[in-house]
Image (spheres, helix red, strand yellow):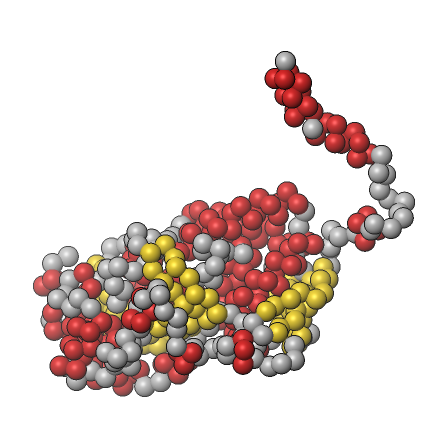
Length: 402
């Protein structure tokens, strides 16, 4: 679509440095109407004053879409059931948020009959892929504008300078240029001072967690109840999905749980450092994994574990709206039919320890597992099993020894 044919653009707006600059730049560069859309996935105080700010920066309209509960039930909960961890450490806080943000923005594009959609992801990051693949799946005939691949701005410092030139207020300074992304599932930090791998991080950076050394000197005990793999209550009290995540973030974060400092392999080919706070995520993954250990049979559990990293890759690589993810969900949901029960956890100075495991349809049998005298297991049966199981090894040893 030629630039002159673009009359209306919907911008994925957060109020941060990049999208604040983008509103002004798109209106000026494309000479078109600009509509700002912010999707609330738990950014909290970051959303205050965005309506006024967006309109002062060039937007003709401003939408804010509350998607917090849908984010939890349709994106976070499937990831928990899958035990999806990218490279065994990243809880996908940003990767899971991008597809629902794109989905809600696509709805506004349709409503406004816009000619184009615009995002603020950089040309080096994963988010450009996540946004654009989602848009291609949901609004395939709408032009996608990615300013970081078009404009002359080449760095955070350039963007800050542009913002000052245009009198655009931004929550970032040249002295503190790291990028931060917050939602219900995590807070992420990258760039700036964090790019020096030889250095640690400033304690003042964190929002959701205390350092383990400053956590309470007494342990805190909680119980989480699940129904078919989905957390439904904390300490016996049923609460809605958003409250559940919020409560666990507060409780686990206050006990120093959930900090992650990793070097991850971005989809675009480079390694980058990410520092994350994910207290509720860490807690729920631990609890869910413990419940699965007694609720799912060995072969199914082992096969499901082999798919967890693939599920994480799908989310990380921007393929949420894909047939493969939907097919994996069908399998995973079937594995969760007996994952109902209660897990007790102990929080203490950054550590989580399971203290109790109860499943409605547990496969654990104390009578069978005991080392004491029992009338269920016949030890003599093991001899025949071992002989058959080890027959290939024995035959190989005999024949090749000759």
